[in-house]
Amino acid sequence: AGIAGADQNIFAVDGNTGGAAGIAEMLLQSQAGYIELLPALPGTWPDGSVRGLCARGGFVVDIAWRERKLSSAIVRSNQGGTTTVRYANHLTTIHLRPGQRLRVRPDSFRQAATDTPESEA
Image 1 (cartoon, rainbow, N blue to C red):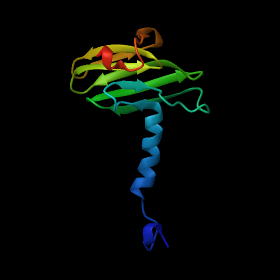
Image 2 (image 1 turned 90 degrees about the vertical axis):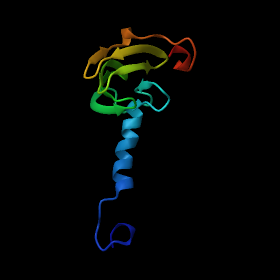
Image 3 (image 1 turned 120 degrees about the horizontal axis):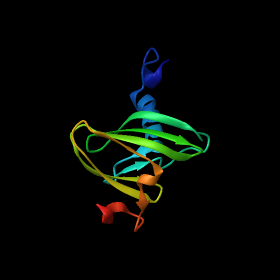
């Protein structure tokens, strides 16, 4: 028998897309009102990159890391706007026009004044 009692194996949306969503959440989160880079990078992925992760507010992010640390990220805006980007306990605020992109590196960030960036917005 297939999945959920079907006569044959079928694509299970919750299992197949849920796994990909979990991986994306380890690399980028944006539900707290800011874009957070590499919030839960697995120890078994010391070097890598990802392209095209979507963040709230119409932003698309490419991230590269080496030795478990951010190398750079490119943030693109589909609709234009301002957002705060967080990496570790460091923040930067960026302003983009529609279609504009900006590369951020570890030296682009400043130390966060508090543990939450809401006070920085």
